[in-house]
Image (cartoon, rainbow, N blue to C red; front, side, top):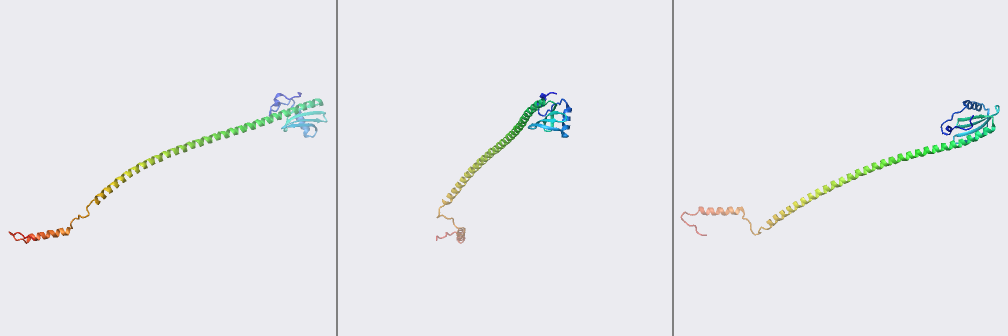
Length: 218
């Protein structure tokens, strides 16, 4: 039976083919019945190497396992060969554990990178949205300023027209006031009653004059 793992055994998660499937089953049965004596054990991460001895059969068992899953089980009657295989399995647990840690670290790094990229993309989207909102607000402010400027211009024009009309009205009032003030204070029109009395007296005088006579001067 080969004393070293095939290259495929170095791939994490890839369970290597056991040359003798019965060896693992026999070892597991002996272990369940308490017939195995543990001699050495070494673990690194999820991987473990065990060196055990079956006294009744004078057989050494060397096991390479991940958690509770047996990867390799080697049975030999040679203590020297069992020690050599165990040393190789211990070295493999270190390498496999190191690769596993490296895989975990890379997966964590990749996950962190993806989260950072997603966060950056969301930040870009927020900034783009903020920029669009700011531009819309700026356009709205510019439009409002233009509207206010037009309103102010219209009000100024209306104010100029009103000032012009006020000036004309003021001049007309002043002209009328000047006409009124230019009248002579001593001249007054005769009263209507006195004019009618004078005319009546003159008519009466004409009535009493004898024809052919000249009225005497008074």
